Image (cartoon, rainbow, N blue to C red):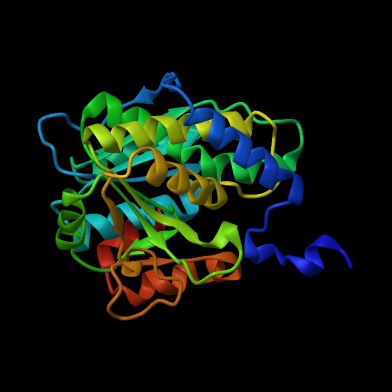
Length: 293
């Protein structure tokens, strides 16, 4: 039986060899105090005059046009007190021009950075690298800004006020959507929403996890590694720092089923084709106009 028959594409499966790769990368990163030097970022950082959490997502140029603007505008409408930061991988000059215009036309709470992400020659390495590198960027921003990071998928639409759900995380060092009932290790953590707090323990985890992701990506994996890496990192964190406070994040922050009471709708797999329909359901004339520009 072929691999893809055992693990359908939408399952975010991990190759057997990549299990070993991820375990070794996580174990090495958490074995000492070495921290990763994050990439040099261009653009505008979130403001530093507050300790409020930042809603953060990463994307490439294609997903900036297709999804990121939806996320930003819906957050501005439904959760106007929330600062939103988007990081873009490998944007073209035209894309940067559009980013600048979009930033000027929207809330001052929005900010954008970018950098050139070097990816392996194999095109299959691109998607896993884009997905996992957000943990490298968020750890760098956490260390630089001293502001907690709420890391979400860029293909989301904010559906409600986020402040209460975010404030509930502030008593914790880190937070993830945990699904302990799943048998597959790469599905025990859903990476659609994560939290890095600006505490000593939160930074300890975030910086080591960023290094773990960097080590794993150096081997050019062809399938998603972030959820599996999070699972192993949490196991090690609980052993080495038992006092770390881990929040069980609300699944309404990354709802693939588009529930009416959800805070963020997240379009996965084939459902990404529904994104414009979902935007229409939000009944936001200004958002529809700006997104369609």
